[in-house]
Every structure is written in C-alpha cells, then in structure tokens.
Image (cartoon, rainbow, N blue to C red; front, side):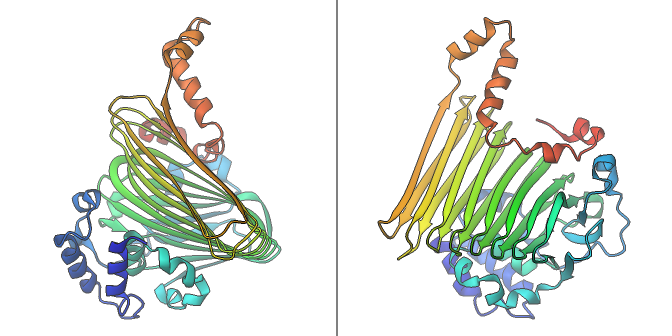
Length: 416
C-alpha cells in the first residue's frame, strides 16, 4: 500500500468507521494533507473543489425520464436498476428473489462481512473518500442457485440540472452459491461539472459464475474515479470486462481477490484514448488460496495528446501453491504526442506457481498500411481496421453498452 495512503488510513482509523463521522474533519484533513505535499496528485487538486465535500441527498421524489437516453425496445423486458446522481431511484422487471436495499453506511461497520482483512491493506484515497461521503449504499443480493438468462442492467445517470458537484455512488453485489448471472453496470455522465467517485464491491459465493461488464461514458473532460473490489469463494468464476468512452480523466483502482480454492478470474480491457484523455489505472490480482487461476489482458490505443498509465500486478501469498496466472498489457501509439506507460509486476512468495507477465508498446508500420491501401482501401479505413483487430480480443462485448443507447444520444454525445 502506498505510504501516503497508510498515513491517511492511520490518521482516520479512529474516525473512519464512527457512526457520527464529522465530514468537516475530512475537509480539514484533506486540505492539510494537500498543503503538506502528501497528496502529490495534480489531477485531483486541479479538478476537485474540496469545499463541495458534504453529505446530501438530492434525489428524493424525482421523476427522471431515463428512457430518453435508451433504446426502450431492447430494454423493455430486461431487469433494470436505475440510479441518478449516485442515488437509487427504482427498479424494473426485477425477480422477486433479488433483494435490493438502499441503506445507510452502517453496513460497512461490520468489517467481517466484507472480508475487510484483505482490502484494508490495499485502500486508496478515492475509496476512503467514497466510503466516508456516500450518502447511501445500494446492496443487491442474488440468491443461491439463481440463474438469469438476460442481462441485469445497473444504470447510473448523472444530470447537472439536479446536481451538486461530487457524487459517490456505492454498490455492493452479493452473488449467492451456484448462481449464474450476467451484469452490466454503466455510468453515463451528461454533466459539465460533476466529479464522480464510484465504488463497486462484488462478493461471489461458492461456485457462483458471473459475467460482469462495466462501462463508463463521459462527454466532457472531467475527472472520474472508480474503485473496485471483488472477492471470490471456492470454485467461483468471474469474467470481467470494462470499457471507457468519451473525453476522460480517469483514475481507477481495481483489486481482485481469489481467496477460495479453484477460483477462476478472467479480465480483458481495451481502451481507445483520444484528444487529451488521461487514463490512470492500478489493477491488482491477489491469489490468497491454492489452485486458483487468473488471466488478465489490457490493450490501449493512444491518439492525439492522450496519456495512459497502467500498472498491473499479480500477488501470490505465502504458502499458496499451484497457481496459474498470466498478465499481458499492450500499447499502440498513433501519435507522437501520446504517452503510454505500462508496468506489469509480479510479487510471489513461493516457488510452486506458474505466473507470467509482459508488456509491449509499438506503432502501425507504414508497410502494413501500404499493403492494405494497395487493395483499394483508404488510409483512414486501414487504420480503423488495424485498431479494431488490435482491440477485438478486449472489447468484443462493448456492443452491450451501445445497444442500449438510443440514436439521439449516440449522435449528440458519442464523440469517438
């Protein structure tokens, strides 16, 4: 854990889980933390107004027409959970066996229920900020032996007409034993001024099988952050896909914990960064049980003056054996002004493992484009074909996101 986060966590440890936590304490602490140089994050300092830190609930009795953004025909009978500006509004077509609770933060004081032993050692600043300031937490409980053939959509909308400045949507998903479910969580931001600091926690019980797709769309160059923690029990299987679209300044902290034997984790992510997008992601896979497998692939394309920093790590605990894990990250530079930094890491405390990691960064060779153009394809089409081929292994499921947007949104808001 970063020493700055250790400092923050130790300072707040006596107050963080106090039921009557005073947000003014956090305000003064963050200001002091920044002034003394502990928080060396210009993106945060330049884009987040600390004076806006407060607890509020602006979504009571709001009649929000979310269907204007969606293709209602494709989602007409699909189960949906709708949130606005970080607050739960309502749900549609939800099976009665699925439990949805919009509760206050008291749940998080029961540390054992979230296996806090694991993720307390890997906290980050934005997760702490979310946990302290989130007004409500949405809890979705999937029962044991539950099978859902359709996608469960969790749709987060952000509308500046009803907004403050900072939103902290907090989602906890508990997937029961032997369940099989596909989940699509999306964050769609149409605001010019909001800072969205989201947090999602997935808990997979024994033999649960989950396909989880996270999509984040932002039209304007705002800072967004997302902290993800997933915990997998024995024989569980998690397939994780995520996509980001729009003009993003994004900071992500992904932590995936395999603490049950025979747990399997698969993650594929693709990024197509344009304009002056700034993408920063830390992705950690923790093997805390023997006989576990993980496969991680990250690919990014850098256009214009975009920037990408990706750090991925595989962590294998002491006395944890028979591990099969692979981490691969690739970058494709299409501009001299673009900057891509890829850092794969291994942290292994024993010998009986099979772990590999690697990173490559390159560009499109002129001879490839010349060969395709000689077949009658324009240069721009050649570049698109090569990019699609490069990202095809990672973003093949992104159609799930665009299939739910209506044509008007795609025309007016989709800038890629």
